[in-house]
Image (cartoon, rainbow, N blue to C red; front, side, top):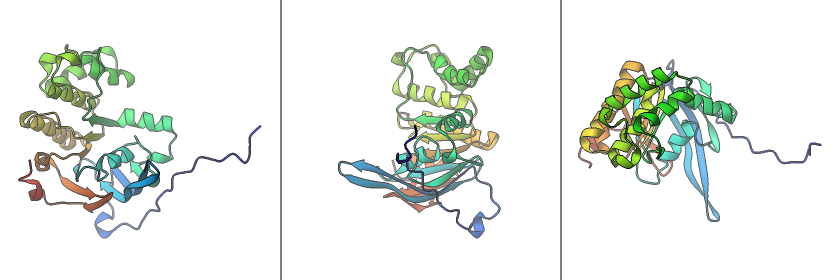
Length: 262
């Protein structure tokens, strides 16, 4: 028997769609986030991490989100990519209202459309570099021959063709990061979410990775949202968004602001 008095889980408070600004009129967005809020409990206190953020990104655009530690960058990325449900607001990604979907459909959306690059690598200790890349393609129902071809190509793109049979314990930190990047790019995602993708890389390999991301954006129409402290990446971005204390402070910051930062 259903208990009619049982409390329902609180629904997300969806932000009303504001009237578009003149510069937004007629534009199509790959990601349209409105009124995103997120709080976390720290001891007995609720801490507001995101305070009503709007984020609009066009298809094929490379956007960096930059700001000090604790400003809400990674939380914002998680909210707009379907990894963490915001407390309020809406996220429309590729014309799909993400947080109105049940969890299993959000998981399917991410598998079909998103590539993720995290600074923690998230590699399986028992798998070779090639197998790390192929495992995602297997979930996408690609045949074994196609999986191997795609994995080999992705690993060669990040200059790891000679390491494809090595397991993580035989790879350096930078090589592990490049395996994780190859895994994200091999399935040719329409949306790429990167959290400090160059944190373990030297300048040369960082340039290789960002050149790849830019190529995917410009040649394949992938949309790239990258959270970073690395000022060197500013040169690769179409636009830089700055965030501080849970609020966006600029939606199109001047790259020259970061030119001399290291």
